[in-house]
Each structure stands twice: as structure tokens, then as C-alpha cells.
Image 1 (tube, one colour):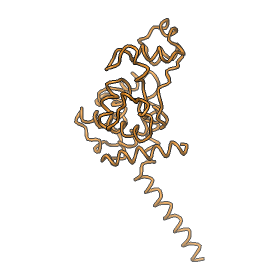
Image 2: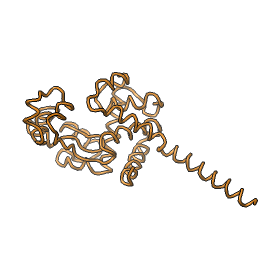
Image 3: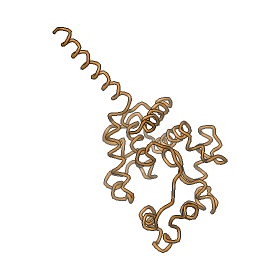
Length: 228
């Protein structure tokens, strides 16, 4: 990871811990999903896609329509997001995905703005500010967990990623990994799962343990040379 990615990962970890999420599997799963979504850098959804890519991301869009929308992010955003979840027909692009986990739709900007005491409706780009994006990320996971009566501090190494991925994909946390993988049209499920495995060695507890082993090894080496 780059220095920026590491710094952002630490901000996410600290934000989650400040809100009471201490489970290393949950934290690693959230980092894995964010890494596959935005590479740990909060950003606005680009939407400047080729026709082929449009049909891959939104299989419901016919190729002929996709050709009309390709490389036209405003038109694509209004087409796929307009008229839904609080968006006017011409507000889809305005309230496209932003932040660490790509917050989308005007209703969501209003809801999460209230939760973090920010006016995201009038200033949607604020969702790309690091601290704001980290808070939105926490509340998104927390609200989904509460919806399904899930304690984010009780997840284990086997179920954490599937549950967090399901939240981000808008699916039930009871959805099996096979179904999640088979219904994913972008390759994001497996990509995020690989990131999850990597982040299991990045969380503060593991870094602390690794640091302890390094210090112990250095101490033993120093002791050997001292005895010589």
C-alpha cells in the first residue's frame, strides 16, 4: 500500500474503534471492501464507461442504450440513479457514489448527513473528505448490522467478510459466499476477499503482535552478540 492508503486505513481503524468496533475480523473485512471499492481513497464515482463496461456493471441496460450513454458520465448517472431514493430525474449524477464505500442517492446523503451532523445534501462532495468518509463508513455498517440484529464485535474469521460485503452490496447477510460470488458481475467479491485476507495482518492487534516479535528477535540477537 502507498503511504496515503496506509494513513487512510489507520483513520478508518481509529474511527471504527472510537465508535466501539474492536473486532479485528470486522475491521479487516471493512478495509477489504473499501480497498476493492475505492483503493482506500475516498472519491466520486467516475461513470465514464465504455458501452461494454456499462452492460457489465448494469446487465439490465441493453447494448444499444449503453452505446448512447458511453463516455457520458452525467447522462449515465442520471439514467441509472435518477428518479430513485430521493433523486430527481436529473439528480442521479449529482448524488452518485462518493466516499470510501461509495454512498449513493439523495436520501442516503440526507440520512448519513444527519447522523454525522453534516449537510451532505447541499455539499455532497464533503463525503470525500477523509474524516467524513470514515464516519459515513461506520454508520453505514452499523445501520445495516442493526437492521439484521448483528453485533459487529461478534463476527469471526469465517463470516466477517461475507457479512460486510453483503451490507455493501445491499444483500442479506445470510447470503452464502457462493451466491455472492456468482451474482457479482464485476469481480469485486473475490478481489475484496483477497484484500480481507491481507488486512488480517494489518489490524492494530496483529501489528502490535508483529512488533512484539520483532522486538523480541532483536533482543535475542543483541543478547547473543553480548555473550560473545
